[in-house]
Image (cartoon, rainbow over all chains, first blue to last red; front, side, top):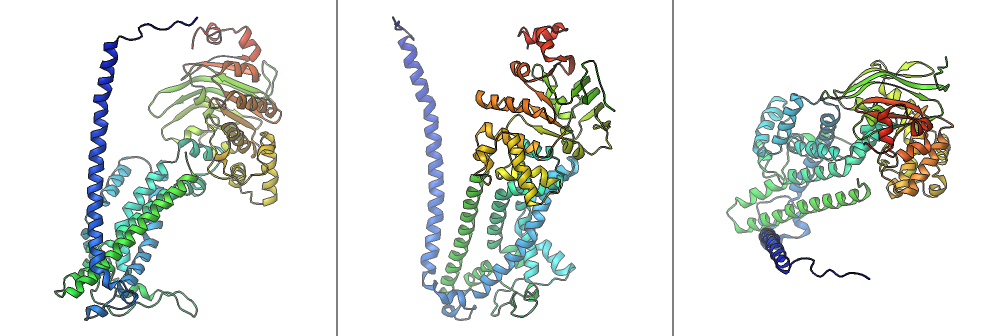
Length: 315
Length: 262
């Protein structure tokens, strides 16, 4: 016959335990509520600002706005040269910062000896990610524009923003490489792979998701940067396009556009907002909305990509 | 030259007065001299931290991946009498001759096929037909072929733990190694998967020599031909498994296998 416990715990004890749990759980509630409040107030502020921009800029959301050059007459002005300029600059930035950043990250993680020099480089790289962007602009003005004589060109702007983006790519590369478990790495070495084979066949493919996320977040930062581009002398009023990168005759690709003068979206916006006429402020609001949408799209894409790749590779 | 010894077996490899120091200066192996016999399973047993895994990982120079580790002494691989710890011998050459299966199944996040083919690709094999044949052969050798032959392009992570470990064995087998190292290969597996792996190992020794670290004394008794008992970085006793488990010479060995200690 089963025995039933008559007195497992004294009743007093039980109510004390329950009171204690209740007290401890209060902390959960307080923390969750505070977090919720902060997130909500920030999100709502951002949404209101964005909505305000959209409402202000609404009359200018037409196809003409995207296909017109800037003009003295606000209603005819558009952002054609700005969005093409931004795109071309970002292409340069991408092709410079991504290979260089990944290579630097791989070198620092896999090849460099761990000593005080690598520590110093590590601290420096992390610090660079936080340096105000105007400093990069000044560096670029001295180095690219004056020393290298690259002029106030798309190439200079692309290189400048690449400098800005480089630390982000390096840090995200190193972090995703570190996330690869030791036992997977050892498995690759154990079958007789060289360091380079391990890097090419395993390290880079497995850290791809994290690297790509870093790249896109870096690009989203670069697209909104104004200060360094102004410093190197981007024009504020430009009514022509750079030469097309693609031509119909051989060699089909040309690089004259790299040397062309340009403007970018944030500068166009800055220019319009500094005009006295209200009609130009509408244009500025519309441009602001376009930049925010572009940034949000890029970040959203990065999150989606990371999610998809992480689903395939789970350690 | 064929080395014979007191057990009248062919020596495939032997460690001679092996010392090992980790980068922080701790000595993990002290003067370990142990033969690995051809076509036999040699089991390493001993309490946690006794240096058995350290010893095993010396055989494919895994310690070289981490700076500051240091070996003293030799591990000689026969028949060519190469001291695989010699600084002049490339660790990659050693790993191409001696393969390893790890404690936790560690397939690459690639397809089943690519996992097995990787060792061959590293050796420069790119011929699709040769790869197909060798992958099939290795998967059969690891008794996994029937379970995966219709889904070779599936991700290896979709396999069960026991299947993943057999996949890792196939990966290690595909390159036709002379010795296979097993580092507690069943400690993360359920009893049925464990039995599968044990049967597999008994079959594998027809083709190669096996050195296995195990926490599980019954496992050592079941599958190995020779057993070595290690304690605090030293080799206490090495003998035929029957002898070790019935009439060990050393008191420490007896205490450990009877459960009085460890």
